[in-house]
Image: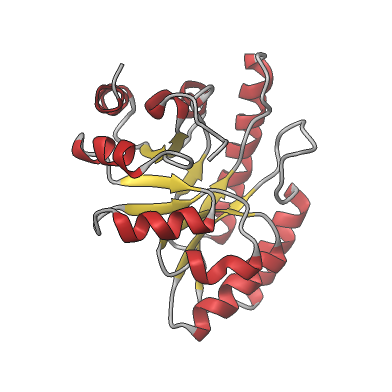
Length: 224
């Protein structure tokens, strides 16, 4: 299957309520252009230098999403160009993003990453930490950041029941936060969950945004 035919197939398969983020990290600009010519406009990158290079090389109407772990010393390479940061995994990072945004007159759209998997390597807030943060933001709103929802990753396992359970937990927390804090976070609407291996389950469980790379572009070459 070609990149363009995969984009077309996914657009037919995904409900209109679910946004496709084509995960283009480690893929060359030519591959991204093939997806672009098939109508795809939202792409996900995870390395600041790579994002910056692609922003300069590729069409201006591409909407870049940053989906990797973001280091505070790399903010200037990402924040001016990313339409959405999926992976705010600590209060410290959120505060640094806000500080940079205020200083540079930006309003940065962010998702808070919730830890739901059984794997130690995954990052993110615990439920308790998330609720504490939302309570704090209720009292002291941030001027440079807009919290638009949650992001999470299920464990990388074959067990569909486990994946389903983790996505269900993520959706339950999303619903709780949205209900309680929608007055101060009116655009808290996005639930970014689901990747190439589990996006169908994620959509079934209420995802509004799937991050799909391998299915579209094939196996990535990590040696670049």
